[in-house]
Amino acid sequence: MLVIPGRRCHTCEGPTRRELLRAGSIGMLGLNLANFFAWQKSARAAAKYEGARGFGSAKSVIMVFLQGGPSHVDIWDPKPDAPANIRGEFKPIPTKIPGTYIGEHMPMMANALDKATLIRSMSYTPNGLFNHTAAIYQMLTGYPPDRVSPSGQLEPPSPADFPTAGSHVSKLKPPAEAVLPFVELPRPLQESGIIGKGGAAGFLGKAYDPYRLYQDPAKPIKTEDLALRKEVPPERLKERFELLKGINDSMPDLEKALKSYAIDEYYGKAFDLVLSGKARDAFDLTKEPDKVRERYGRTTFGQGMLLSRRLIEAGTRFVQMNWPAVANGNAEVDSWDTHAANFAPLKNLHCPKLDRGLSALLEDMQDRGMLKETLVVAVGEFGRSPRIGVSTSGNSNAPDGRDHWPYCYSAVVAGCGIARGAQYGESDQTASSPKDKPVHPNDLLATTYYALGIDPDMIVLNHLNQPRELVKGKVVAELWS
Image (cartoon, rainbow, N blue to C red; front, side, top):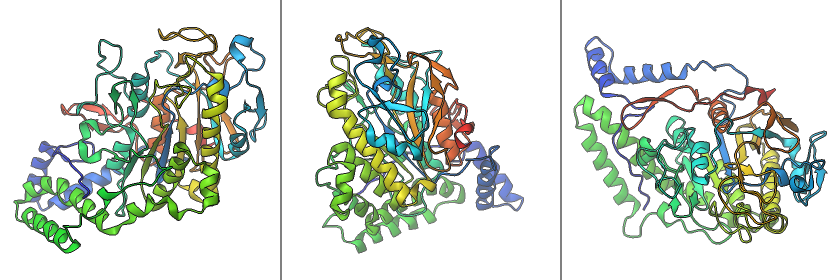
């Protein structure tokens, strides 16, 4: 049976104790709690970006998170005129973006870039984060990590962490239908033994954690937790829910206002989810034609991309599709972390999967008209060192390996009116740093919120009731030009 846990708290959407006291006094003057909360919500909606190009253009997001740090030099930003120890073994090929070339092992994406903008100026400048977990945390929460273990990795996830982007979206833009608001698949964010850092709701509370489908979508998917247990028929579940509502309705007004946020909203959604069966249907890839499944690729990544599209179609607001590998895993099996070997794994494993899966997603969503209201973002936590065989993060590297490089890398964004067949920003002659238009990870995250109609500058309250900006980033509004 589906369980959506949570804790009573006030956050960016919830009332504070002081606000409730104010609401009580307002009620004595003729404005009841319902009026107060409606007024509060409308005030929040009056964002300064209202009416700006691209603001509110997205209803949903697919975040294709390529954890592990793909090599931008070999995939998205080749430098054929650079010295051999920088340009590497691959040749560039032309794309649908005039004058823009990408690596030769991405031919399908070369043809699909007429549906997207290629950003070549992602950068953590001036402060680089060379650790996978630290960079992942920054990329997905909009804040740098504040605690690092003696090993150099971050400490495990904590309820005090900043929420991942999907959790904020789940809170601020809940879907109207009985669907899963935020889904993460097919495995957690991970570096060595640190699992899930930057991938949870943190101080928002567990009610806003993603639904975690940690299964291989290339194999049959089990969704028993989205179905009723055999011993609990629908009538009995309905009776339990009605009893819960009855208890809630008998509370005094102020206490009921607090309780209703935790009971009616979340348990009610869980009830609807289980009975509707819509979420279970979204996970059923057997309903897709074999031709479509083959186009995406019968790999974990490819079928995960197809599943992402199905979830968005069903009404899910935010899907985070993680590259199905540990950030510092074996590059010759599944990881982008190409210290020991860079070119063979990219040529034989990673690029073919990425090329097929990402291009299929863009083409499929374009054909279905879904790119009009869905933002697609494909990005990793950083790139790889322009020079081959050197150490930039303290790791050892083989003669053909590339180390971590946060100072310049690439991203692909598409949908919601973002320019098609365009390149934004440019790197220098060695892909070491942006030549122009640098985009900090926080800027990309701020732009994602902006597209969803969420003011990235809005204030949220953390676990200590301290005010914090949703993200400290600048919206890249030029992407819509």
